[in-house]
Amino acid sequence: MSRLPVITGFGGVSPAGRSSAHHGFRRLVIDALPALEASDTWASLARLMGLEESTSAEARSRMRDFSLVRRIESTHFDSERIPWNRRASLGSVPGEEGTRLRLSGAQIGEGLPAGWTLLGSEGRSVDVRLDAPAEVLLPAERRSDVHAAGQLPAGFDPGSLYPARNHPRGLQMTIFGASDALGSLGIEWEQVLSRVSPERISVYAGSGMSQLDGNGNGGMVASRLMGRRVSSKQCPFGFAEMPADFINAYVLGSVGNTGTSMGACASFLYNLRLACADIQSGRALVAVVGNAEAPITPEVMEGYAAMGALATDDGLRALDGLAAGTTPDHRRACRPFAENCGFTIAESAQFVVLMDAELALELGASIHAAVADVFVNADGFKKSISAPGVGNYLTVARAAALARAIVGEDGLRQRSFVHAHGTGTPQNRVTESHILDETARIFGIRDWPVCAIKSFLGHSIGAAAGDQVVMTLGTWAHGWLPGILTAPANAADVHATHLDILRRHRDCDPTELDVALVNAKGFGGNNATATLLAPHVARHMMEKRFGAAAMNAWRARNEAVRTASADHDARATAGEAPPVYRFDQGVLQGDDLSWDGSKLRVPGYAQPIDLAMTSPYADWQ
Picture 1 (cartoon, rainbow, N blue to C red):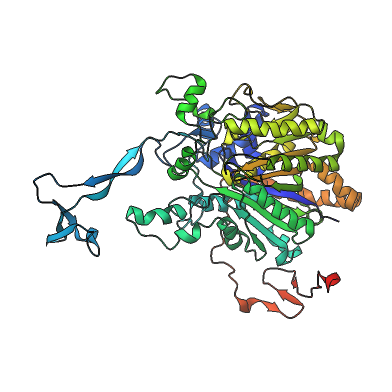
Picture 2: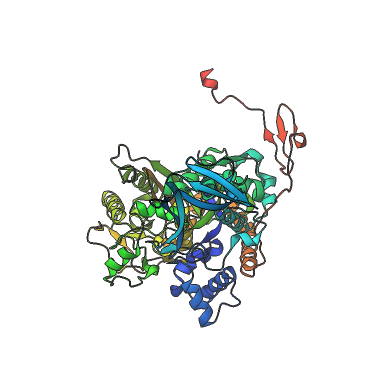
């Protein structure tokens, strides 16, 4: 019998703010919320942004203007004046004898380039003559074609919250996000360790683009070309699985399963699939899953812009009929399933804590949702590596079929919704809408509600589906389906005969939404769709499996857990919940282990690793 993976905690940070306690979700629908709920989220956002108060009109105007998708801020880079090097050739004037230069001796280094002659030195300077044309790089500036991005709220600096030690931004966000998820759990991690043996904990986290700022791979590959020295940290910090490594080494101290599965823009769901499989099979009882992406650098954005993938200012002006030179509305840069011109890159870090349902009962953990499964399919033969193919039809169809098998025909047809990938590109609006529309037709679904939250947050590459998952949890907690507010109508080529692509926030009864499909499409043919079950459905399944008495006992234990989770939220809003960062704490060596042929004990874990294994291939032997 398969075990049921349930989401018991979640956290992170995105352009909407802190994720735990649904603050990120509430920022999306804040104008539709009751005053008290909105006030709590304004307070959380104000703390994140370093504002002294959250109630004045001035403060709330700033929080609106400097969260979600907006014009790129100088804390990332100046999109009007991006430094670059322009190639030039130094040559001699006709009739002159070479070109004379005076340089610092340190700039000469060891040996002169071909065609250079050393004439003499004076103090620390040397004189050289160029007898042949020399290629040089001259400092210059250029203006970016793209000026919009989904940035973390202005004023928030994750590296200032702990000793960051030149960590790339994505790893700083990892420390914050994983700590936030752990705090939201409402259960001390040591209590979890008392119930779980070391090898039954999994951490799957990574980055689709790796760490490409100056402290990671970006600095490593550019340093020598820029005349700088490569540091000893840039290479190791740049690995794509480093978020998982940081969580193991500095947050959890875990010695269990670890790694990341990369699938471009579907990477979060790839990691969720690994964790789901671990828990379903019993290989793990607890799993921390997430992705952190910090791609707002000139080089990364230049790469996507060169593909014609990003929404440029010229493209936005053309959509809105604006004159050349007019500043477009960068807040509305991402327009899923509408007339659009490209996606909007974003940064985000999202993490969820999965548990085996039986362990969640024992600990009294909160049940935010269940992950029924995650389906992954490739596209097959392709003409272009970046073009979409058939794989996403397979993943959506399989996810919908599983939903039907669990909640029934009526549950799928009348009580389900979709979080679409919804990038805001002309190609996506056609292909993904056709996939969803055809799925709805085949399964008899009418007016299938479709959300596309990249309209608020932008596209955070490997973390994008994590954004979608935590916003799905928000719908079940607060009863709102977020609409696409950046465009008034679908484009003419969008397939929506059986879809209701939401253009405004929709109030709903969350107990009448049984299942959600979270869809992701990635470059290269990486497609994934998750089937998430509502908390009330998960609890019903757990009661059927474990009995009413067990559920009543869980409810009693859960009261203290919910109180502890609310306390984490209050402390985080007050700035009194620093990230967990255990550098050089509890470091273990081989001599610290205690073991024999049947058990291996790891300090810090009450449960030993069982070495008395039986062969899984007994029928073959």
